[in-house]
Image (cartoon, rainbow, N blue to C red; front, top):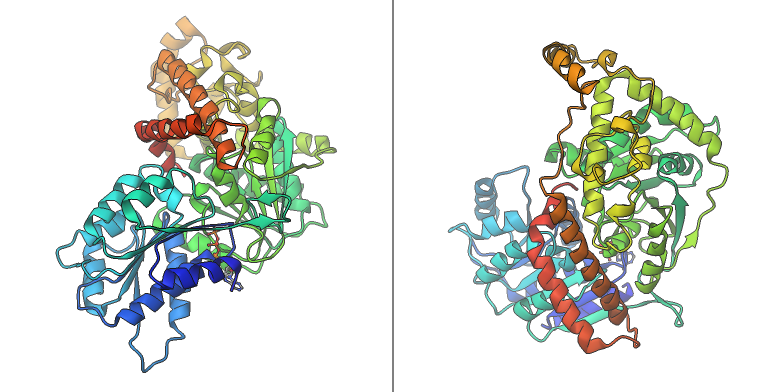
Length: 566
Ligand SMILES: Nc1ncnc2c1ncn2[C@@H]1O[C@H](COP(=O)(O)OP(=O)(O)OP(=O)(O)O)[C@@H](O)[C@H]1O
């Protein structure tokens, strides 16, 4: 057994509720699967239509993975004994009615699923939870985040209070306290620490993490350099939004082969994000897991937690995630179960460099990576990138979409004293996203160094910049013919057609920013307390935590917007 299994299995099996925190890849899945099977087999058979064990996970991918590990354990049941069976409940494939029908026909004791589908399933009059023995909340802190908490409360309301409950995560935040209060009875908290005695750390000891301080324009070239030169079987690259995954997948698919040296092996690229329909989503993940080729998965935080792909040696984060704990979950896709792994983080020059100090407070140490000698690759990349953009106007539309989604993502960072919109390099990132012209957006109004009318390149005639799709091009021509005389006469060249993305007024933005700053100060202080920084006034900071959680609840609508863009 791994340490977390050795400490959790006996306690959980002896009818204790548990809250378990252990680093990524330390074997928490088995630490809850063995007890749930044990307890259910001990209880004996349950009546038709009754569920005895429930496992909740935040993403469909993670629920599917847990279900598959569970089945691989259940295969070892002695054939003569009562057999334990499981069913997967996730959205995107079967309907709830089909799930219920299957449940009634096959009578599994354990169901594994995502919160929304589980709540609907438990709401069916044909499904009974009065015999429930065990409830597991995997990635418990995430289940409280991003609008999930209402669903979890709904599930808890349906379930009987007499049960065993286990919460598991690599990052059990103080916010989990509320869930512990309402959902658990005298729980035992199990924290498995790693480190060398002197220095406790929150990432596996076999994971080495480096950061690079880069200009916006150097980020993708540096990524290409790493894809081409690092040693790995599989790598995962985290982008901030779905639109940026879609976009850079196309960019890299086209440009990467042109920048590979004769020595670098062919790399297979995959793209996975939450806006893909479930079929392609599952297929992509399976292909990435099963491919024998050197491969790179471009993805969002939809693949940040729990996914166990043993051959992942390298994780690259193009930007820090919007919330600090996610950094650990993303990086933890490498270096699992004692394997060695490498993590890379790209920071933009300037204030973002202090992210390294923040992570130090969070017990994550990083060393600076050497990024010298990139200039030739940068030039070569942008030559190819410009050609690709100019090849079709569709490409520029996608660039605008990805850029706007990135700006939007940036405003959602919880650490606003580090990630300040007032210091955001609109032009640098415009160039990094391959834009010819910045889109019209209210955020740009108060920015001083924006080139005239947002043009980032001087020699492009937008009127002759065509779509490859004939239908789209026809539409553009018609629009141009209808609009051009008025627009040109009064305002010069036609404006970019992209709509302003934010409906908030600038005043509200500034007010929100001030609030965020205050909140952020509290969060850093609270992180210090969480990590035992005795110099802080703990009573006052406990209060701050309460306010922080209350604030988060209030801001839920804003936050859940990000959740759907993963
Ligand atoms: N006792 C064990 N001996 C060897 N390998 C193990 C053992 N238990 C689990 N593993 C392997 O360790 C890997 C990581 O396990 P698991 O996915 O449960 O980690 P985790 O702690 O849940 O990570 P995360 O926090 O990222 O979800 C898996 O590939 C699993 O098969």
